[in-house]
Length: 403
Image (cartoon, rainbow, N blue to C red; front, side, top):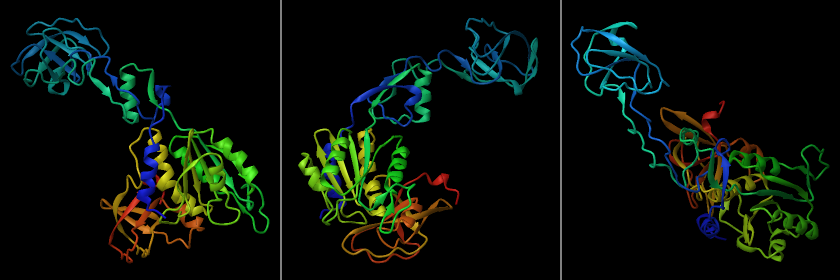
């Protein structure tokens, strides 16, 4: 049995971002750029007014009254010429007339379209945005590895990019094993249970901007399992739930070995999710997640999610993005393995307050299904009281919580 950190290190050599693809700009949200892009225009493209007001030539003597030579709106072509002792009424974003070197905001004037009384004397360059002061054509706009946020996409649109080169999204399939598992819409017989894994994994994939493919349910039979696993191995990542423990019908590892997979790890010193399996083959990766719902969830959050994000081009790793927080309820001890408990989060005066939910075991879907974070208990830790520091890993956007 190895530590979670060692398990992650065994994965790292196989987590190179996938090859690039070109996608339309409006379909590139939250993707990662695979190559630099440069500015195509100067920003601003010419000298423009930063305010609604009056463009002036040189200093003035308030309360001087000047004739209004022209009115210039945003989008008007440049070329208006302004002489000394003249003003031009100008709108925000409109081109500065030739000869003008300052703008007086309209609220500091008294006038209209023909004549204007100037109530202040603005300094040179006042309220003028100079051509290229933000960026020059040819400057780097966004860099390889940058996340295409809403703001980044607005930059790309400003510079006319119709398509963007990004790292390809992994193709991921999901397979649920177990004679006892039935579809959620079925009425389970005694000894059976409804499949919760598929809904969890499909939704978790969607939270990453990915559409996983469900391969359905498969019985604990080597031939049936082998056929489904072969189908899933045509994708970049195959997620299998169940069949990875020590029982007679836990067949996943044997089937993976038969199909030429190299087992990277099969037991990790975490609770829950100890019997998680990771394997590599020529076409991609396979994760065997435990059959207990909580164990499957924790294995996904700790190992699968950062793996997929690395393939997408993100910087990510085991426990990456965890935050320091304060306990609002006691945290139990841990013996020989790290423990990861579901928790609720509350914000108070800039502090993150954490309430562990206290699951009854790795089968406690009710606790793990409600948690919005994982709280970490290092191996060998004593119980921690209210007010003690802790580490939490966000699982959802806490700001969207209705609580």
